[in-house]
Image (cartoon, rainbow, N blue to C red; front, top):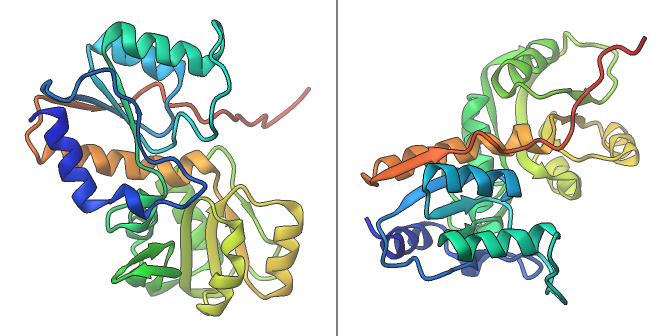
Length: 265
């Protein structure tokens, strides 16, 4: 399959026109690869490490969730990360394409995959945007789990470097209704409260957002940006493989950008 055909297929599923006004979905760098047979490296974040991986693997398309370029560039200078990415992309003829908030909304997108990982039943969008699609998912645990069991399930299935959650007096309380949103989802707390979810799994939550959630009787769980969105990249690889591409691979150089010190002596 040619790169142009792959992008056409993808955009029929997750239209870049659906992205938010502040977002930058679609081609980040297109050095003239549309007619080439697709050799795709899928990643969460396009970085120099991922670019070097693509070069080594002879990929011609980096398909990323996070955009390489968010704001209009005023300059490109040697030694800067984006400038180096652009230089290497054109030197090695590697395109960079990003699917961000459009990919967040669709079935098998970031939120939907997270709901599936937790086995949520009858999941629907937290904030619908169009028929059957939208941001986040809220659904039922059948059978219900204790909060402690749910935390253990999240830890096992997402393998976050750390798991932060609202203080609670009873880890044995039963949880039946859960909301999820991969990536930075704290701005959706009010919308989640309206769904009557007991627990909200997301990431990048601040101190006072935990306070807000506690005051609104919502258990907030922060599993980290990488852990909540990387699984959707793996699902995207599976979907691309079903198209019988010549070559597609999940990046092994994706970075979490954070680590945890468990003990300091």
